[in-house]
Length: 382
Image (cartoon, rainbow, N blue to C red; front, side, top):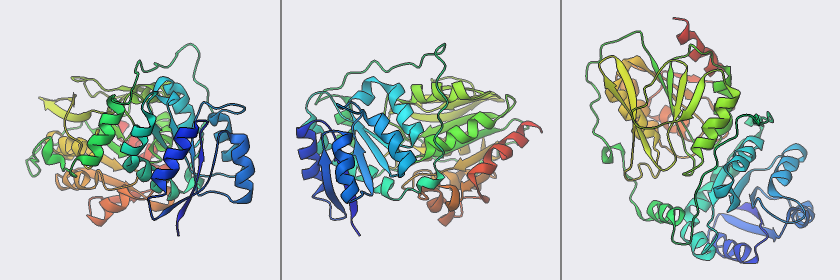
């Protein structure tokens, strides 16, 4: 059955180009479009969509207000597609926290070419959203403290800018493995130590999953490294949001950051993050490189580096997300003797990445999201 999509955007050009682009997909049907949420709601009363593609800045009612109303009245998968999200990362975080499942950023100029070039990402986001189990989302409404303003990305994209380049790269590149970044040394003997590190990989639904895990952790928790699939420029704001909600420190990773108890490092969007070891200390490297499993950052890259550097001294978690990024990396981590977990289907928003890991027998245990903070907290008490 085709996925029914409603497009809500105040630009007639965007609506028409998006309609033309989505109409080429055999599994998607656009049931309507509207220049603002008021018109959209009138149309949706006649036929409700499976997925809403939503702009943020619109007349009469902004997209964020509409998103919050929909999630209360009749929860529906929402993909944010807005130029405002590039300049207002805080609003993007509010949208994700309110229940939006994915972000597609569009430039201020050259929108027609951009949407056509980024059609693969848009289709992927819509398909992932259509598979989401919204009952697993737990929107958090805790406001950000005014005393700790979130960093806003200083980034202006044009039709030939970085966003378009990333989309073109994703479409044109073959699906590479972690070999494109570093070679596996799985099987190497790693001396077991009392110092543990936690590695987490996630995608669709992961922002909400991390918001339910990190705020529950004590300050004595082992050091944590995280890959969350997210567009470039937004991970710093996401980390700042998590930091404002958590006892532990959460920040976007930089090269040579040490992995320390009570600290969670999130890979920057558009960069790979690797874990390296120097004696008894672990640190991260943040590097450029090709997309792996069509992602940058890639969970497979993070997990392989953890397998190489930490081995049995690590604990790996693969959480909700569409696709298979991280499945092979978790298997490599598991084979070194590390303890590995895959989130269970019942608690996943999208049971894609964990499912692929389970198929590879990469996990020691299948675990509900609600249990993960306790598992990590117990490590801090040892």
